[in-house]
Amino acid sequence: MNKIKAIIICCCVICLFSCSSQSSQLDSISGTVTKVISGQTVEVILTNSTQTSQVVKVRIIGIDAPDLRQSPWGKAAKQRLSELVMNQPIKLTLQTLNTDRYQRLNAHLWVLDTLVSQQLVKEGCVLANTGYDHTYSKLLIDSQEYARLMGYGIWNPQNPMRYPPNQFRLNNKN
Image 1 (cartoon, rainbow, N blue to C red):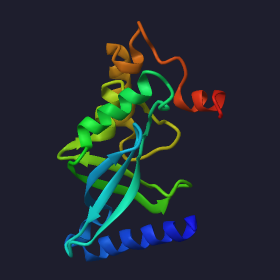
Image 2 (image 1 turned 30 degrees about the vertical axis):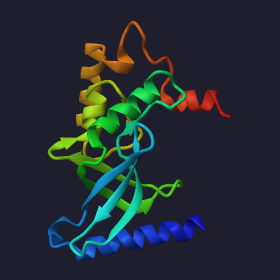
Image 3 (image 1 turned 30 degrees about the horizontal axis):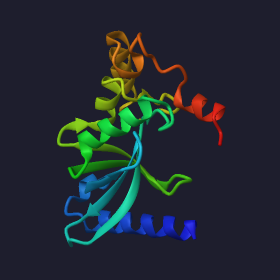
C-alpha cells in the first residue's frame, strides 16, 4: 500500500511539472503549507495551472531538527517552522522526484525569497545536515557557525542541546 501511495505521489508531481507553464524550471513547484509535523517536515497542498491539488508530505533538505522529545528544542523548532510557513504560499525546489522511506518528498522550501532551512539554522532552531552535499550546503554550514558563535537556540551556552538528533533517537528508541 505504501509503495502504491509513493507511486501516486510521484505521478502527481510529474503531472504538476508537465502542466507547468515554466518548462525551464522543472525542479520548482508551488503550494501552501497546511500542517507542520516537526521541525523539518510539513504537509503541502501542491497546485498547478489547472487548479488541481495534491497533499504531500515534504522533508526539508539540509537540516536535522531536534526530536520532538528533545525538550525544549524539538517543540521550539516545530513552533518556529510553523511561524515561518503555516498557511503561506511556498515554493519547493526538488533534488529528486523520489520519496524517502516515509513517503516524503525531499525539497528545499522557500517563502518569498527566504530559504526556510537557512533561517532555521541561522536562528539555532535546527542543525545543518552535513551528511550529504546539496546546493545550499555551504550556506547552511556558514549559518550554523553564525548561530553557534552567537549562542542562539540549541547553541545557547546556558542551555545547550546535549545530543544531536540522530544520537538522541539512537539512545531513546521506544
